[in-house]
Each structure stands twice: as C-alpha cells, then as structure tokens.
Image (cartoon, rainbow, N blue to C red; front, side, top):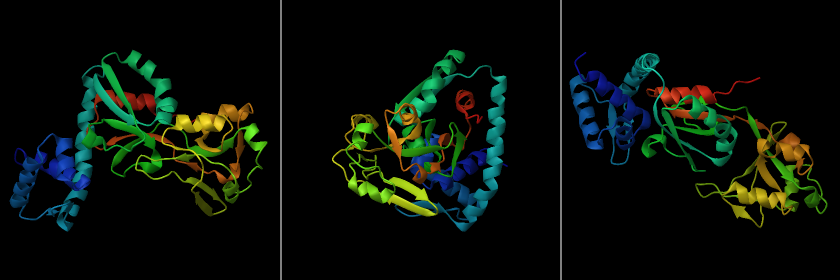
Length: 296
C-alpha cells in the first residue's frame, strides 16, 4: 500500500458513514473541497466509483458499500491499537467537551465529576446542558450523554445508568379535587403539563400494558421547555406531571407526591455516554471508565 492510501481509505469510510462531505471534513480536519478531491483521486486509482453524488447528498455505491464493510473492522482494529498506546503515555490529559440535558447532568455527571477531576488534574471538562440532540462532529463535541433509544447506530455507546421509567405524579392536594386515573384514557379529565421538545413538537406521554401502547398528547394550561417550571407547577398541586422516576422517587416515598398509572409506565433504555467510532483520547477513555454503569 502506497503512502497516503490508508488515509484516503479512512477518509472514504468517514464520508460513507456520515453521508456528507461537510460533516466528514469537520471530523477529519479537512476542507470539504479537499476531501472531495481526495475521493475522486481514490476512485481514479481504484478504477471504480465509490460514492454517488448529487447536489444535496452523497452515498456509497454498491462497490463503495462492499469496500466499507471490509474497511470498518480493519479501521476499528487500527484505532484500537492506537488507543492502546495511551497506556504508555502517562496520565490522561486534555480537554473534553460534553453535551447532555439537565436530568442526565444531575443524575450521572454531578455525582462523578468532582472525584474524577480530582483524580485527573490534567483533564478539563466542559459540559453544555441542552435539551436539543446535538451533532457531535459538526458542533465539536467529544461525547454526549442521552437516552439509549435516541442514539444513532454508528455511535459507540457506554451505559452510564440503569433502565428508567417516566411516571405520572400529582400532589395529595390535587387528588383531593380530582379522581385518581385508572387508565391513560382517564387523563382526558385531568390537568396535565405539556413539555415542548427542542425540535418544536410536544412530548407525548407514552404508556404500555399487555401489548397495548398509547401515546397521549395532554391538553393543559401550561406548556414549557424547561423541566424546572413543569416540576414547580406539579409540586404546587396545579396539575399532573410526566417525570423521570429518579427525580420524584423520594417525594413519592414520603407522600409529598402520589404516583398513578404505575402499571402503564414501562421501562426504557437508560442513559449512555456516546461518541463517534474513531480513536478515543486517554482523557475520554478515563471519563468513560469513571461513568460506566456497574449494575448491582
């Protein structure tokens, strides 16, 4: 293999994986035009078209798909070998940029980061709390923390918490004025808090029991995109809330909140640290190990 060919193959794999010259160029540190030129040169050397291009998209051809299937395990092995060299470089160092949302920051990062930073004085961590699902590569993040069910397949995912549930709760004072709901259909007769998603839509309240699944869109007086406002309204007895179980478990246990529709609230994949399938820095590897969920 000639000098530079491995780099070109790795660049092709990046373009084929994200299906964008712009995103792949940001990941690799190239300009989109230089990356496009390199791919045309690679195709000319190999004598076969690897990428189908239009004005709006790029995708691997059948030949490109076959090459990508061969390259992925080989490149992963190379990346693993390079990462293993970190054991010979001393302690982790450098800057880590993370994106996550407020509940994950509170449940996962807050308990771990102080000790992690104390044990790794040469590592700095920047945490951006945002309900929006960010593009790690395009926005310059090293990793993120989100629910497992929201992650793209091409991401490396490390579980950092148990399976979770979202539960329906209200105060005793609220239920002194309203009957307890026994099925999700009964919520039509209740006041409920709406949550506005970053993409603009409203968060549905999801229920499941005995093979039946329900996505309920509540109608209420209050809609917000910040859980603090919603939680305050619920705790004031103004309405029912759809909240992460760990956030309200203590209040349910001591009677400040009443949980309803318990048998209708299924678990879903919990929180995961995720990052692109490329070489992992020693600093990110150390943080991943510190956050990794240890069941039991």
